[in-house]
Length: 457
Ligand code: UGA
Image (cartoon, rainbow, N blue to C red; front, side):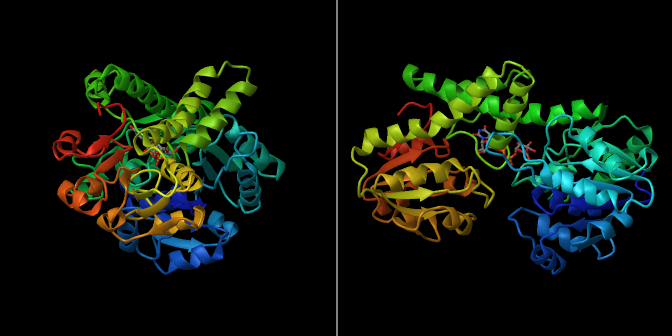
């Protein structure tokens, strides 16, 4: 294919919506992106990206004003398109369930603007049966069954590598009962499916090395919706599993990185998502796990396994606090350097960040914190108390005269810091590495008290 582009509307300029819109334009479609936040739309029209995401601004700048437009009007976007992607937020309710009211509002608004056959695509992470509900909302708002089909097409991108994940996915899931809608989806992803896009942008640095065309898997809508939740829950399960193994390693005097590597060589297990640490955070895993568990519970399914994954994750912070206490004794008035505030490296996102949770506890215990994060200081300032914490603009300054260093986020650049320079800065050569980021042997050789996760101290 690679021929005629499809006219696409993307509703919601959040992480998923924005990345999808820019990438659909990039692979040859004509895209109109909608958000009800007028200030956000004005900024995007001026070429400003509201999130920190590698390659996104660069890719946005490559698009012509004809291939990518921004508007606040759903009606305008729907009329100008053949496929409408819904990528609005599904925030958690107090009971753990996802709040689907934005999806409902958007579906109702789309209904009013349908003037020809449209494929309505659910891109947000949603519980099973949401696509059925969207169909019902369309009907209730007077849309003829032949005028629109609903498709579930979950997105698997990660923050920090979102552009690459979108353009070079492991798989594309299309959940629909309609052959007509399936054909539209096949042509939308056509340039990836036939590899023509990868040839056109050969060796572009925003693509993975030697990208291969992803398989497109057609499923029922319910299966597609479950694939998304079940995948995230499984990845979270891997993390909690390796964190449990890490605790055993500490007692056995083994090294969790060696154990995980040895396990991961079994192709049935795989190397990825076996890094022990402070546990998972971010805007997806904690929320999705809760929503998935609530859903299973409501279905009458035994979800104890999922509950345990969450419980293990919650315990990681306390476990690490215990380690800090065991070396520092009293925490009151201790000056601690903190490297990393985001929920993981490569992002400015602090939502459900384990680093932020730990810093909050340390502040509550009377520590004085000097923090540095390459991208997340502005976002961290908004959520952390003002008292007791200051921010500096490089890693070594944070360590100046500190009683200990805490590495809380896996930014690769922290690995490059010279241990000798650390030693000069720190009042005491004590390092707590919550992400097993630094070279343990080197730190020991240089005489540091070096505490990490699941590795001999
Ligand atoms: C996650 C999934 O990886 C994506 O596939 C999915 O599309 C996305 O959620 C979503 O549902 O939107 P993301 O939240 O961006 O993506 O971040 P991850 O890279 O998955 O990391 C999640 C958390 O797990 C981070 O706090 C990270 O530090 C932690 N983690 C990850 C570990 O502690 N150990 C690991 O081995 C891997």
